[in-house]
Length: 357
Image: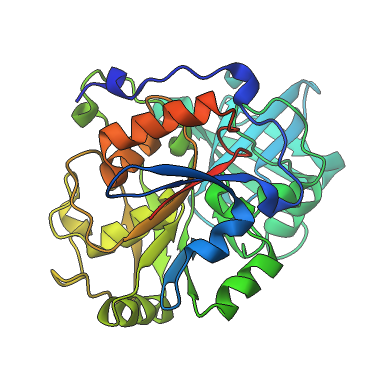
């Protein structure tokens, strides 16, 4: 398939700049996975769409306030640093603007001296390795004090409350972007879901900025996926196995939960590295596991674990709309997106949601 097969026209006014309040009052487009039939709801209606014995799998990763504004110690020139990946305890791969000011040996300071950094080297793609120093045992409390949320480039308004770019159940620090399908849940809604007899389990997949990397290749099979770290605990593996045995549905909240489950449930993933071969049996039996995944899911992929998906509306020509198309069917997905545009649904991170059941 061609990248252009996944294009759709989206008016700029439908790119959500701010989240809906309360969280669960965003709209929800329900699609029947088999027929493609769609109906319109609000997110709080999801309680009625779930059945006793279903299992919701959520990603509990928490976004690091990874955007830092600082100065060069020698000249006072302003510099912006985005933390991408922790390489060692205090060494991070970063994206620096303007890059020409960040030569090896340059010293930086942030937050009136609460955090210092030294550029060690330039790595592939022009990113910089920076070693940070600070008072205390961990950089994370410092980041909570002085860091800013790394909002996607299409959100141009300032976020008033950083917690609105976190899910209510997030607690494993490590993401550069929020697993946004989960932003619609409130604690009260989760309690109602549990009271109905639906189980909730967690996985952790730390979302990298590669999630926003556009597909540039004309043939979608030529695109190379970025790697992200995941963890599936034993409790979640047990609940998935139990749900499958009892005939319930395993429903992933977000493409990140989906990619974690399918990494662990797939023997013949279309672009799975050898070291990522499945630890699941052909029937989708799961075991606890952690590691790195670069699984790339596009139409033609055979799902092994997931029976349903809750997700937001994604960018045209992105790997995320390709994943949704693989699960719901290409024609169904593009028709649903056309409907969502026509019905003025809000798109992307702070936008409305879609449930495919």
